[in-house]
Amino acid sequence: MLDENNELVRTFRRIRQDLQLSSTPNLRLRIFGIKSRNRQYDLPTSSDIAALIPGDFVADREDRDIIVDHRGEGLKRITSLNPKFEALHFPLLFPYGEDGFHPQISYNASFCPASMRRKFVTQKEYYAFRLQYRLNEGHTVVQSGKALQHYCVDAFSTIELNRLAFLRIHQKI
Image 1 (cartoon, helix red, strand yellow):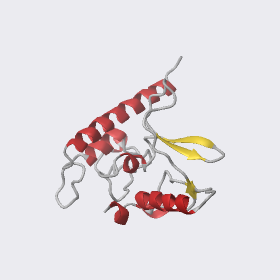
Image 2: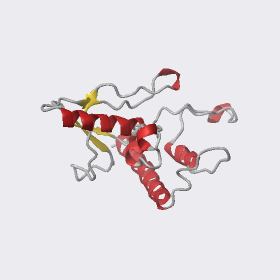
Image 3: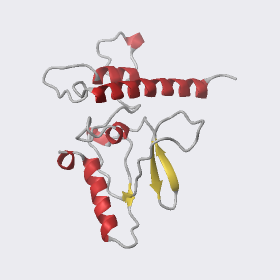
């Protein structure tokens, strides 16, 4: 199922095949962080080799992320604010490679008074929306058993880490 529906799985399998066929591979995979215009997705077209590494290289860093090895450029981080982070972290919950939270999700404020309107959805609102059971929609996350617990804990820790990072960056000394 993942091979048929998830663009990330297909891309990683294609890179693995290219690595096996080439004696001196110079492959690159680029995962685009934000959707393109008209709410359409840009497929990864160039080739970087990516590695999913558990843990962190810096002990005092609070953020959990995915490390991508750019040949010649060293290690680069894909943070939890990248739209593809959830699809890479929970491939069975997001078998179609759907985008997760990113800071540019538009907020529909048609029912709010003008004084309370804002442009973007918060992380807490995004996860609250994802965890709601709705008729006529897929329920992969809600019906995933223990994976739902993992997802909820991960969502909570991500929200709190980003709140703390915001306070640390914007505090007045």
